[in-house]
Image (cartoon, rainbow, N blue to C red; front, side, top):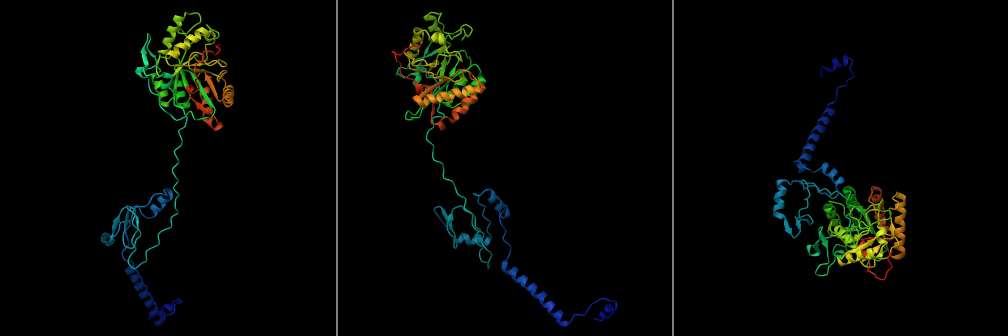
Length: 412
């Protein structure tokens, strides 16, 4: 206080505080310390949370709505209380003062003594969708076809030949793809030829096309075992492509093992046995080798009839690739209605596929033949087949369309 006059004389605008003001200042300071101590005493030591709780859990919940944070580690006092009061029932675990919850659920964090427990956070319920109903079996579902059974093979001059089993089972039934005969939608079948010689294109056809497409393999293909296994694994029926003398022969040549009009019946029979022994596990044969459809050979009714009789004795069906031909007269089989890749352009293929659908809607069934597998053809067939059912028709294997032989039918 003695220095105040000197400070005032120095020009500082200070006024000496009164004793009353200093008294109230120290009273406020002491009350502040006392209040802080009381609050800390009430709160007690801080609760230590288990790793993984806190803001990180809240952020995880935002990205994983069905996840629940781990329970906070209880304090020793809380463990003792829980150990003395917890009871377990079937599927639930409870403690005094808490509602029943499923066993294994996270326990709530206990509130410090003296404080009311905080209300649980409100979490919006995440709707759990109902499991989808099991769809009915689809016609395009993959159902493996069995490999050739030894009981349905016989030794031939060039390899194993198919035959009717001793129990009456036939290859055209055993190696056929199952189909629901109660499906009354218009039925469209498609045979894709020209397979086996180009392994890459054949593999692409097997992978991309629906398993209800029937595949015709060339007898000149030397290594088709793996391709046939893949096709059977997807449930795709197989046919042997027969090299019959076509229009324009010899410029259009079906190979050195072709069945020709200028050969004897014995020679043609031997060549037929050769073609049928190239591989096993097929439902029948088609009288076409790629785009060559054997018109000149088929025009000779007696030779075509003899070929069909051989197939019939072996339990095989015959597919006539010539549009307009009648149903095979001496074997179970069917004739094609449309050649979808003649000519092979994109627009022409799309137009022919539309014609094929129209025939099926009008008559109930229709068979299309595609003679040469190409990338453009596979693209168009895959796109068409993928939307066929949306237009009210169903794609079926060729065996579904085969009919009983009619010996009185005209042969062309």
